[in-house]
Length: 336
Ligand code: HPA
Ligand code: ZN
Image 1 (cartoon, helix red, strand yellow):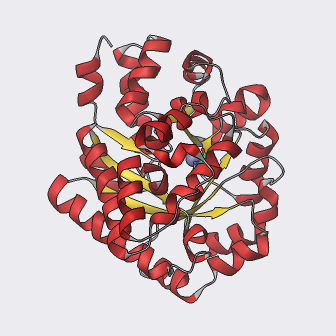
Image 2 (image 1 turned 90 degrees about the vertical axis):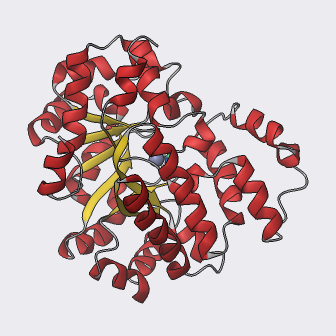
Image 3 (image 1 turned 30 degrees about the horizontal axis):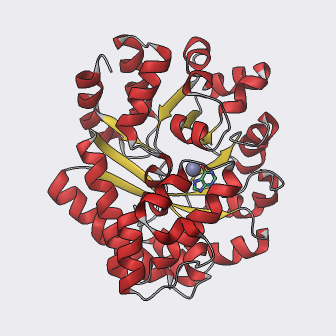
């Protein structure tokens, strides 16, 4: 890519990365063996690294990806597994020029398997401390809820004692909503988001990835979110797009994810230019880097190749990425 060196050096903030989506096939097989987890034997995809990567290259939808995503994370058992996973991501991120990362995780996907929330959080926290110490990057954790599960179950997890304790102690910056979007509209989670707001947690939700623009409107209105994860289908509602511009809500776009999960045919179809022209703030992110063929710099390069941005465009994107971050003002000043 022309400007590759420039894109590499740009000080980046990442806001849309699922730590479980940073599980590489090599760590997956290593932990499966160590933790004696049996991977599906009736699926040839799990027979080797190569076949697994080949299968990842053929995802047909978000649902198809999620099947592999949930099987993959079943190898995570011990605190040190969660630490290794997050540390692997932080090293990649730092090498790609990330200075600040706000990372998602899915507690319900682990507690449902009998892994305690404390195990997950302690492992991730150890990796965060190491990343700040050894790589100099700042990080925040965003606790995501699985929208394909009944809302009362999500609320019950939200209210677990150790989960509440992690909010009170400041280990968790905010909450998010992920997993299958179609059939699971934002308003189902209104009560949980209202409670999160009262606790001073920041709020975001996946919306307008596979779901319609009306889900973006509903996330803003019923959940009170300050950011929208993905949000590419915002372009289908010009009036709503004006509102998003007026409120300064940032979208966390994930261009390579959108192509791999077939939300769009190519990165050219991710409405980067429309967002820039309309004044919609957005950041560019990797989503599930180990599954979608690239980390954040690969996404920056793909956007540059497809949309031929100027240096000024990139500087604006980086400025908005800092402004839309959930770190304190002092850290934002350092990032600028
Ligand atoms: N969408 C919804 N849920 C997810 C995703 C995504 O792109 N990645 C991991 N969980
Ligand atoms: Zn996502």
